[in-house]
Image 1 (tube, rainbow, N blue to C red):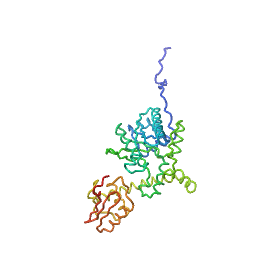
Image 2: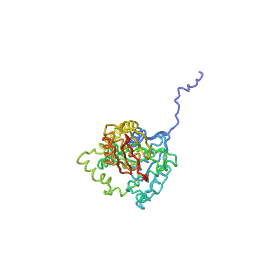
Image 3: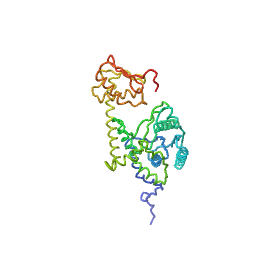
Image 4: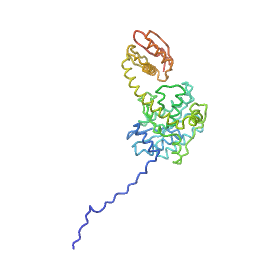
Length: 364
């Protein structure tokens, strides 16, 4: 009996052995959801990860490395030495460099003198440090061709920020807290660079646990325990008391408030844009002219227009409530007036035009 050739189609085909990718950690899955919800990252993006050495920034770096192939991104680690805390700061830099090397990621660092910035610009240590960090991160992004900066802000930072602003007195924009995506103005004058906060949906406790799960002993800044600083006092003293006496889920409540405020503020900004375009005659860095007859009757909307005008003339100076109210009162009265405002700005209402301009010799 003749032998028949086996039917090749009936023989199961051997599949080449392909390594299975490990499933994402629960932490990484949550961070990925945040990234997708806020459209933070696109395939092919090059990201500068700002890493100080603390739990939050280390968790940021670890989770971005875990998501690197899923997101199709490249990562460059950036670390700024603030010129504070002596040997501790030197060790922070060494620690972050070694962490970047262990993940096979490129690393850049720079040394700044925050005390010098504080003296020159009359800024607090926190504000001077923030200014130095973003100057470094923007310059690094431009240098290496990155199109995103990632920072390690968490939901805990969000809750602290919202409460701190409430205590200081804030409007709807301030209640929005830390936006998941924002633009960092380039100190060198280039286009703004998007800043993303992939950890904004997880807490500080979760970042610490994530680092420990990776066997990473993150760095701790001793100044974080100085309760003479408002944020530390909130974190270590006031917020634990509020959780105990008022709301055990305080952080979630404050984060929800921030999200609602941001969404409401975005809608109001659209309405403000329309009112601004109807009233504006001239809009420059030196002078703004608005038609008095075209200004809105709504006091709330008029406030927003006045704040916008003052910020356009001096972005570095947050408008004072009293100055905004003085302008609103003058506009609603409609009588000719002239006033000097904080931030080296002069306002004048005459012949149907409200003019706001930098005072002669003002340089900001």
